[in-house]
Length: 596
Image (cartoon, rainbow, N blue to C red; front, side, top):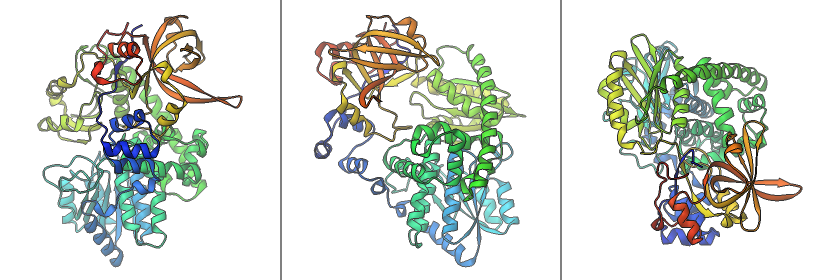
């Protein structure tokens, strides 16, 4: 049985003595600590913050670059009675950050109004149309959210109009910065901020803490805004580690107990009880509906939904977003089918998927994301807008898209984004030259095995999978981008039963030494035919808890399956039965064709 994925076994980690000592005091086992270290937890203070209450893991917002300049200009605007135009991007990260900033400025006593650009007419980044609107409406200050760091010309134009621009952003920082009144971006080279992984909405959340620190009742108002920042953080695929994880824990607590009217309306429309919300809900129910407004509807509807305090208005706006989301689904389905047909003729050894067509500009990012996930390699999907092609990019295999596009900048009209997701505009006549250069650059990343990768957190003989392990892995929650649900390689199982389940799934019963484990493989109807009773298999699975009749049992959510011991690393573990994989005894990644 050939694995569908390329399995990457746990790499060697060095657990520092101070981390080991802190873990022992907290009652964590060595295998749990190794998982945390592999995911970027590098010192004892981080471990304490990881296990402590989330508020204690939030950093001082005064450490943000230009924090003092930002506050000073806002204070001047308040004393002068100046209005503030809040300019946010039209995706879920930008919209939730826009709402966060608008709420915070209003709570601080300012007149603040949101502005959401048109995806087709204005595109990403601060726009000249927004400057004209600010000037016409008498705003002396523009605050950007999730954009602005590369808007040199637009900031200069604002200055001519007598408007000060305060930038809050988390994207790539160019060599030359705009002449803004403040640039709050933790990626600045001179930044001393402890965690640079914040999304645009996360930066807005930190600025809200900054603005409301001395306002009566302000700190509590700011903390509640973690609800919005959580949605933006997940939607922008920012890693749920460090401060982002603390924001997510705070945000989920608010969503479950007392969601904003707009969030409550979205949950109700999706048929989800607030108490059941997790980051999967955020990723697959909330974020797509908010994004849909900017893709095929009116993005300002989403901003109004997030800002409203009225339940009736929220319900009406949620219905509009539901309609837009339905249209988005249909458009994406058609475009994806067409793109997959084009990809089918691509050379199999190319390191990236690059296609273009006549698709709605609002859905090319969704198509790129699906292609990258299915093919296990970066995907770029472009759509024609006259003589210009606008493209969205999604990463896979460790490719840093921001760096790749920077190396192609002479061919591009403009570009932006970060390592995992980016976009650009290019003249149609330069498309083929860009394609050749990008494929050449990305070729160094292409694995010899083109199957999508599965990264294992642990690899264990089946007998070592127990309830303490289930509890330890639960400590990683909330899981999400950058901190996915932990996957375990469970080795040396015997199939005692397999059957097709409704919905295209397969259910299995897997025997180990003294008992059996129930397993389900979602979307793997093929296993009902490929696997037979008595087969010896290794699986990659998520451990889940199942309650039945008042008793708890471990259930495996199988991501992939292969003949037992087909991978050299798996064979070494089974031969020694020594517990977790030790990297010195086996290679780290599965080779093409090694599992049969």
